Length: 239
Image (tube, rainbow, N blue to C red; front, side):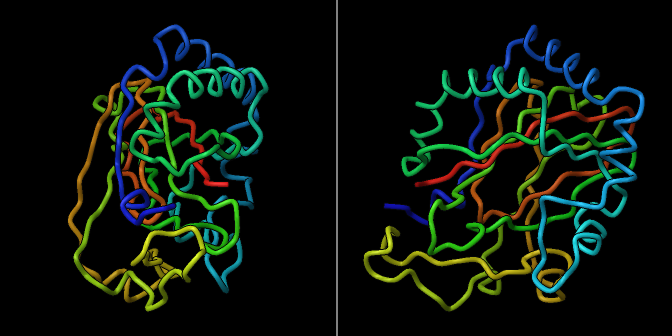
């Protein structure tokens, strides 16, 4: 039974990656990117993991990452194996706060340079809250120290009802009574979202900390001041 609190939660797992694992993953990704990868997965990229109903991928990129970023959807097998191994060791801590989670989607690699950021948005229970698997939360682990580089992760909370649809979960759908769903287009493409009052909570977790956040929680990142912020992302699902 999925409760709305799971989709609005935020949690951290310190020490998810050890220093030597961070160092190895950084090297693996350096090798994967090579001399041309930052162009291929950055300025030359025409795809994005984000979608906006009625908009093209290029338009979604402009809304979500107006200054660009590196996004790699198929990471090296060694990186996947190391991240999956760490997640297996920490899964009990994940399901303590997200009891409906049964698995996760493939890992992505993300990298932000100076001036780059992700605008505030809600992922939603993608792709459809009434079909399975249901995307309950996301998680990121950063390889760099954002206290030095900038690019802090944040969530935004609001008591405004504009974010929610009028729909409620049908009886027997696997959701707790009173479950609500966020509107499509809960991002900077929508005038109602831009106008909605929100309170921002920014964090600079230590490198190697897994930050877990609900799929109906507004989130984003602040601009990088200097250097590069490197991180991996996955989505938790309920089968």
